[in-house]
Image 1 (cartoon, helix red, strand yellow):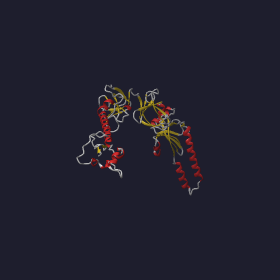
Image 2 (cartoon, rainbow, N blue to C red):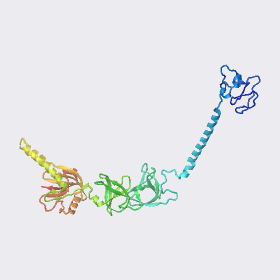
Image 3 (cartoon, rainbow, N blue to C red):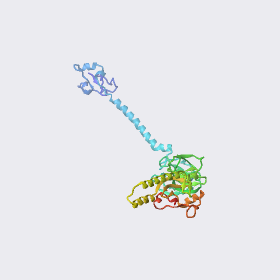
Image 4 (cartoon, rainbow, N blue to C red):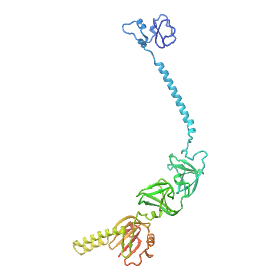
Length: 400
């Protein structure tokens, strides 16, 4: 009789005490029962036409299906245990060691270059009026107050909530100021305030970090760029406000102010003849040519009666032709010119008193009432009226 191992199912001799295959102790068979009856059916294959003796004579591997699942389960358990240990170690590092090794803190901002335990407070100056906020961010923060231009402040530089901008945490703990509005040196003296006037550049200009061409060039603004002018410095630089905060400087401030209205234009005005030279004179010539063509058309037209003719002529006599400009003349903003029936006008965005002052500086003799002296025709500077108001504040007019 074949005695099968209850652990691995291998066949053994009837008197075997241990399995020849796996070494497990053999369980004694109950008295009077055949050993083969205790072997699970799925572990024994009986070839057709063979008896039990033939099965015992064959190679065990060809007749018995071994249960190899137990070693596989043991391996999976071992791998799972190792993975669990690694997971626990990782969690412990993240929870207890990572912060200490990285030196991070649980605040609304991360440590900046000067944010060390023994960092010393530094002094800076406000380059423009700067907001004091309760948090180092412009998003969701509250403005606690304002720091006037030129004010000295002390604090420690921190990295903002966006992890890129820098902020000064005030030494007294009463808020934060964006570093873009601060500098280590005091701002230059402003000798003339420009009241945040918008200037559209007429050529490419260089923007410097300080009122010196020896400083760092921040940017170049191309022609047509709108810049906010804050003031003119004592050393002939224009301080401008940058879109992202802070200030920059343009060299040649006086020259820039002289062309505020746009590209410079010359006004060669002769009050004795009401003639203008240069570009303005050329434009007046074009307007005059169109006006003469209208008169010629009227003269060649047939009218029903004299009243109709006079009505047509009156319409032309009372009509003015305007041309808008955006140019500058010695700091004045030229806004338009106009051709009237018997006179011509140049319009300015500046008040009459300023226009009179500039023309006097250019050698013109102008009375207190704004009229040019010693002229046979009328020539004068005055405030605009009627439809001309839409073209400027001041009119330089000349004619009969």
